[in-house]
Length: 423
Image 1 (spheres, rainbow, N blue to C red):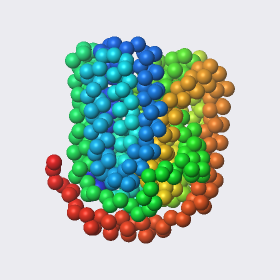
Image 2 (cartoon, one colour):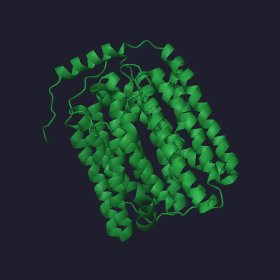
Image 3 (cartoon, rainbow, N blue to C red):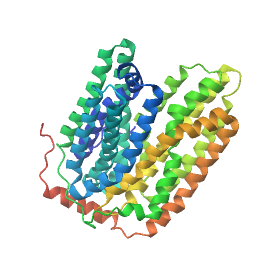
Image 4 (cartoon, helix red, strand yellow):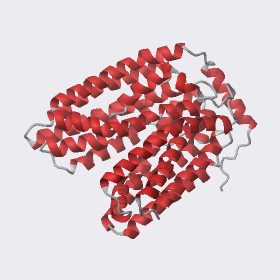
């Protein structure tokens, strides 16, 4: 099994930063809904509306914030956005009405979207091109480990059920982003990459890349499938016990922690990325077929089908993740990685915003037919991504990966290495 730790140096420091704030995120995810209803005092419908608006704003802000990271430097931008996220979380501690809640949520979503883009640009500046997918695999494993620890912490607050417990969890979340900022400061500064210095958002006119990002957003519907679609399916359409929802989440998280790095090893360029995504699409068809079988009356058949489908789902998820990471970086022009990563990352927001409505209509509303339609959609999008990526690659001239790696190392050699110095 591959070493669970990333290589020493920038990759390990990036993983530590990921771990610190993902612990806070895990606690936030499991407690936020009840915190906003029980402590802030908002109705569920208003919470849902506010968060939808906030993430819509955040998705729009991700691209210009990514461009700022390209022009001003990704490390400083990432540090500031981590601090802004911490401030947003801390403000949740004192808001008690909808208007300030909406303002805090918009700041939170905007800072989170920008932070994701800035960190991708930071990784691109510190890690050689051929090592980026492997580095992202380590980061994804670290993310899942942090989310699991944070979810356990949030579970303690849910068990206690007191206002003090909820406030403590949100305080820990805010502090985690402060700690993340301090860890990011330990990284060497990244010189602004050569390229067009204008503030114009070129990615908005890059049709081939937009098509790739759109198809990837379709494949990202697997995210609300695990968190929304499958729990509703289990409770509404199967005879399986409800506790199975939690067990399947643990299965997914643990498998990604253990096997994402190994899965990413097979992806090292656009052709292998397209192949991994096609395999992911084919697996998603099987996932949908097996999940559809769980509607059987016998509980043991339902549990077996759901467990088997979940194993196939996590395999498809890891293949898609590795392939999409490779495409998102390889197709981004030099000097605009943050801008392009900000645009590519909007697919996550689209999937999380529209996915629950779509999956509820398909799975709960149409049953087996909905599963078949969903599987066909995944398959079509996965097979279309290969030609779209080749189209995008043919519209730009990028330096050879070896030359890029040399430039990265030369830049890093000119910057004082601050690794190991505590702050």
